[in-house]
Amino acid sequence: VNTLAIVPRTRKITALARKTYNVLLFHAQEQGVERDAYRVPLNRVIKTAGFNSNDHAVIKDHLRAMVSTTVEWQSPTTGEGTHWNVCGLLAHATLSKEGGQNWIEWSYAKNLKQELIQPTVFARLRLDTLMQFRSHAAIVLYEIGTRYVAVGRTARQTWQWWQPVLTGNPATEKEAPDAYRFFKRDTILKAMAEVRYPFYACADVV
Image 1 (tube, one colour):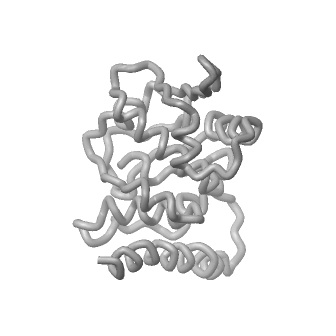
Image 2 (tube, rainbow, N blue to C red):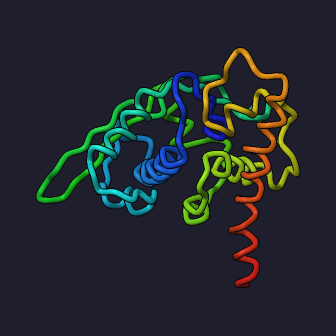
Image 3 (cartoon, rainbow, N blue to C red):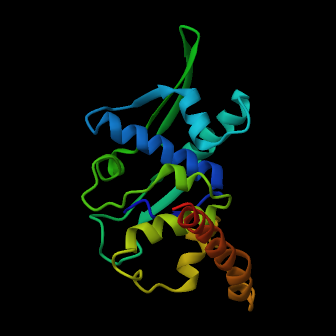
């Protein structure tokens, strides 16, 4: 739950970075909280996250961004989660080649690792559904909707609180008078339409 509302402070979080982060978190949770670092074959991450390139320079750019992006971690529900935290999306990332196979290794900041790998409050996400989304806002909306589906609604927050969470862009101190109108048109409504599609498609198949 602490990862639902990732508030970027230094740079934009892209949809592909968010997908990759979820894939890495999935593998880390499978390997357990006892490890200091996690490793999987790189092609597993590339295939699941939907990279359209095997160019290691591109992959390094995304990993570099995740390590250098400073974020605050908090739940939409005030008081939910044990602590407020600020750190990078990843603590470190390494690419290596062993026996002809490429591997990725990564770790998480000490102050958030326990809650990420062995959370006390959590929401189960479907990676196959999450990977269908094209925008960062749709990914986040799906994640938050999954967490609060049994509750019915999230806790009330101002639209300024939700803006960096959904867009993946750091908040700016100055906003245009009609900023909410554009945020609703360009982010909220488009994300809602995108999230509806996979579920309606599944319903049609069933």
